[in-house]
Length: 397
Ligand SMILES: Cc1cc2nc3c(=O)[nH]c(=O)nc-3n(C[C@H](O)[C@H](O)[C@H](O)COP(=O)(O)OP(=O)(O)OC[C@H]3O[C@@H](n4cnc5c(N)ncnc54)[C@H](O)[C@@H]3O)c2cc1C
Image 1: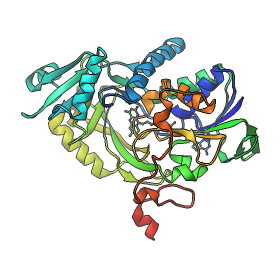
Image 2: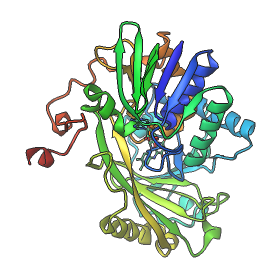
Image 3: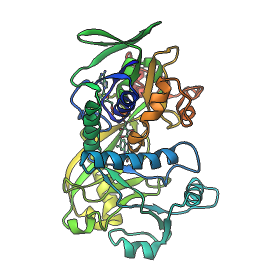
Image 4: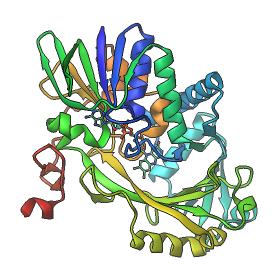
């Protein structure tokens, strides 16, 4: 089969690698360089963890598979990208029946060794952190982070090595289908494929508005900080960390190759246009530093080297979308990473490829559109002329 893939982020590359490995003839179109500086996948680091995903569904299986494959790709390429430095989650409660409690029990039933550290123990093991009287921490040594831009580069090289025609600096101007297949148009005209995969992240609405109008494009900021005492933040002693998502939601990374640590915050964020300015705000800068000054004081004394923003491409229920665009048979949409998609880059390829090849996949059902977009009227149903969700106040102007 001839397959055209639009987008050289983690979803598009994963699809291209797997489809080519199955004997298909794949062409991948990326509008700019790979990694693209504005792509959601392009960043210094993305967390890999399983203490988040409840007690079932697709994600725990998929993330464990992904970890093995990231390792395999890393070994094959000789490019280190995966750092299992452990993950510390600061909590205030974990009542039986709560999602976190269920998640922990479920992971333990699968053999995971996750420690509950009461406050004093947590602070003596990780003296970088200050925990308050009512706080404790979970520690999963399995967790860590992936150097995401390097991982995207690795995947693009792997795709090329396996025979994918990777066309960078080739924007796709439209996708369409007719009874015999898919048409992918660029400035050089349309190209015919049997199937097309649209994995253009926050820009997907420009190509498939009927899906785009249900995607929330939102902005999350981050700070990259140079610390005065790097010894305290090296991999051997500093984990990836997160604060209780129900109350604070801050999270961050240890000292990375670039000599910086990173902090950001969970949550959906402000709805924006995909081409919004990505430089961070003074307000976020101040809030993050104020938080760090008491939570991780040594980090709070650091110098902010860069502030910037990244865009979530969120679905109404935060599950990815891997399905035919409504009313089509040859245009498959693979997007909706919803702020947690990167880590699955090494395991989502087979799910996308099975969808393209109409093969039953145990995880596929979770990502079908079905009736997931039948949600009450709200801001996300307001779209601009290109199909992007836009904030309500803008739509009134
Ligand atoms: C602040 C932040 C923190 C995150 N943290 C984590 C984390 O810790 N762990 C985790 O697992 N995930 C995390 N994520 C989510 C993760 O980064 C995304 O789910 C994932 O990177 C999405 O990849 P993608 O391939 O769908 O999109 P992208 O990476 O955006 O790729 C889409 C590509 O399509 C290209 N493109 C667009 N339009 C066209 C066109 N017309 N023609 C050709 N090419 C086109 C773009 O240039 C781009 O390269 C985070 C996201 C954000 C914003």
